[in-house]
Length: 112
Length: 113
Image (cartoon, rainbow over all chains, first blue to last red; front, top):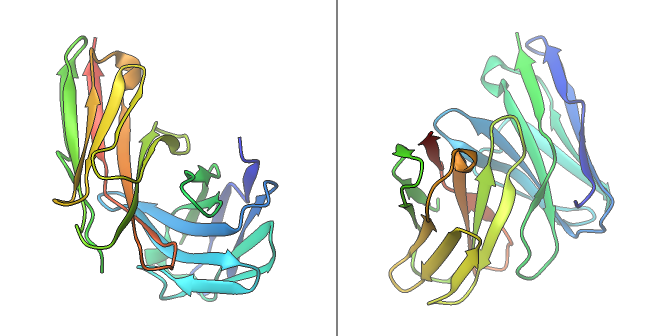
C-alpha cells in the first residue's frame, strides 16, 4: 500500500463553517489529488497538486481551496461549507509516469 | 471539459457468465487510461494502466484492451464470480502536461450466485 491516510474519516458540520480535510502520504509521491464521490457522478476532480506549492483546479473546484506545503500533505479546505458539499471525499497520490493511483480510505462529510 | 463515459451503468450477471463493459474517451492527445475496481465501503484498487494503442492486459480472469485511435477500452471478466461484484472505473489522462485524470462514472457489476 502507498501509505496514504485521510483525516478525519467522518465529519458533520454546519452550513457556513470552515472545514479542512487532510491527506497524508508516506511514499514521496509527487502528484496528489482530491476527488469527491456522489451518486451518479463517480469520482469528480476537485483540485490536484503536481508538487509542493503547485496546485491546479479540477472539474468541480468552486467553493474549495487546497494547499501543499510539504510533499506528504495535501489539505482540502471548504471556506464556508454548504449542503451541496455533503459528499465522500477521496484523496489519491501517484508518481510521474504510468503508475496507478493509490487512494485513501475516504472522508464522509455531512453539512447540515 | 473532458467526457469519459462508461457503459453500461450497471448490470447483473449469473455466476459463471462472462461479461464486458466499455470506457469511451477523447481520441486525441491520449496519454494513459487506468482501470480500477471499487468495492462498496472500500477505496478503488488499481487493475490496469494502459498506455499504448493495442495494449492488452490480463490479471487472472480479468483482461482489458485499448484502442486509442477510436477512443475506447474494454474490460472483460471471464467466468464471473460473486466476489467480482463491484464498481469498475476507468480514468483517462490527456497528453497535455497537466497530469489531470478524469474518471468515468463507473459500471456497477452484480454477480448473482
